[in-house]
Length: 73
Image 1 (cartoon, rainbow, N blue to C red):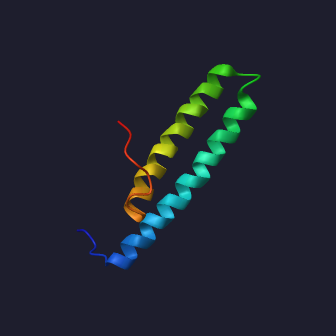
Image 2: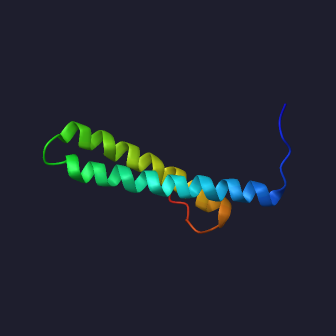
């Protein structure tokens, strides 16, 4: 069974998801920077995760603020 939510609740959920993605992106960026000199492979893995969260942020920003990011192509 699925719950029906109103637009305000949906907006709050998207904003919470965005805040979580911001924290994760920063965390993985820091980890990548710290691991760079000592463990290049782990640093690359952390960078990939960081970039994944950046993509999530771009999508959530576009939902919350249409037109904030311009399409590249």
